[in-house]
Length: 67
Image (cartoon, rainbow, N blue to C red):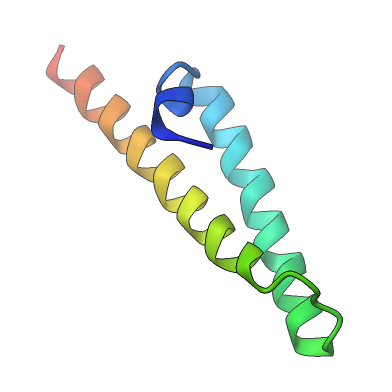
C-alpha cells in the first residue's frame, strides 16, 4: 500500500483501514510470542502501513483546519 492510494481515501475509510491494520499487528504479535509466525517481515510492513495511515490522517486534519 502506498501513500498515493491512501490519499485518495476518505478519512472514514482511513480510520477503518487503521483499525484493520492494528488488529493484524495484534494478531502478529501473538503469533510471534507463540512461535507460530512464518513471515516475520510482515510485522515491519504492518507497522509502516499504520504509520502511513496516521500520517495521511494528520495531513487531512491539518488541511481541513487550514480551510
